[in-house]
Length: 514
Ligand SMILES: NC(=O)c1ccc[n+]([C@@H]2O[C@H](COP(=O)([O-])OP(=O)(O)OC[C@H]3O[C@@H](n4cnc5c(N)ncnc54)[C@H](O)[C@@H]3O)[C@@H](O)[C@H]2O)c1
Image 1 (cartoon, helix red, strand yellow):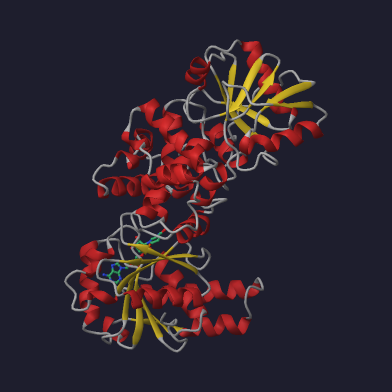
Image 2: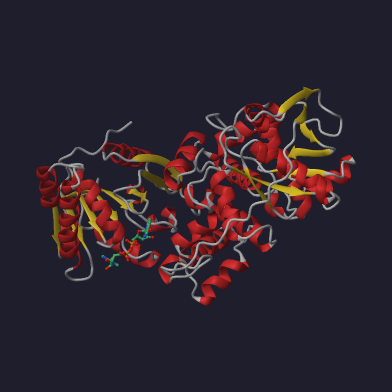
């Protein structure tokens, strides 16, 4: 494996906007002399002065010494002419997201820098293969995809196009690691790892909203408090901006030749058309005006508290509720599984409570002849979660469903009742995240370990989607996807071949060779 570029190697950054300035800061703090160039006169010098202030502020907060801040700022040199980048061993471009502009820049750089200098691109959505095409030495072009803000977020996707030299990718990987980042390797495919594999987080939420499963505040609360995600999908889309999120979704959808997995949502398009872009425009799914009231999260009213509940069989991930019931003074009678619910079920006052398997409560109740059925959404950690989502079969009479709600409340969780949608919220989202991740792995986009790492570091997921599917049980995830596919009749929910195989063998998705 080639080592990282030495500290005395000169790094050039082209484009002194939000990303370029951040990348220059990272490289300078790592000890490199950084040449910063921007086509707009004065922009690089402005960015250098702003970076010096940022570094000073970091020193004032005690994040680095005053000397280190001054030295890093002094290492960043704004340069007016592209020719001045000649001494660079690595150039990272962060100019406008336009294929022709980036190609033109690389073509010019080829005749300026040394033959062994690496040409890195921070593109989020363009093909590294296409960016390198036509160059004299396409093997030295590699994606070095930082996340915004670059000095703060650890992930760097090191993206190899068809012509990228493996040694070049390895050098950039080692260099990003030496800069204190967490690099992962990715093949140049639309969305690379994170922007592709995160799509279901938004897409399933938008589908649930389109089906009026619940309001946005309630769905966000379920995804946070049961799913363990740092932000709910709707608040996150409001933060990212609907124009940006919709454009990324649309470009990935087009790049995959209209694969229904990636189909954008009409709801988001409406928001863009209305100019409701999220926080930046003051309104998106939420009203972001200063005095706006936070919408209420819907919770079921208190149901009757049971003295005794019967647990039939193994509840799988939901088994962690049993100690919570016992700690709350509820008697839990553990018995063998019943034929209608081989995967375990809770019986309480003549009603049933089972973990969702991707069917609607109504269809599952009809299939097994248990009409008073409540389905429980998956939670990241049933031992600790403060909220869960449920759905109730249309055939369940009102008093019966309050008993299952009361049982969950007795375990100390707030209950959000969704309309009877297939796979509820957390379960179907995690199943679809794992499905996309499994496809990306089997298509050679990334290794399982890099993929899981990227999703945790790039978008803060509480677990990598592959390890998460292993924790739920790959067979269970396969069943959820199969039931979603049957329910909707859409190719969107087709099962990733790797999940189908692993569900048979029981081998884990994470960390396993494909
Ligand atoms: N903003 C993000 O969240 C984000 C995250 C990851 C990657 N990216 C990618 O990083 C790149 C830059 O994004 P940004 O948000 O920093 O944009 P930006 O608009 O803030 O900055 C772009 C800068 O490039 C300069 N520029 C444009 N054309 C140029 C050229 N031909 N030569 C030299 N300078 C030129 C502009 O004057 C501007 O200062 C894009 O490829 C984008 O897709 C952005």
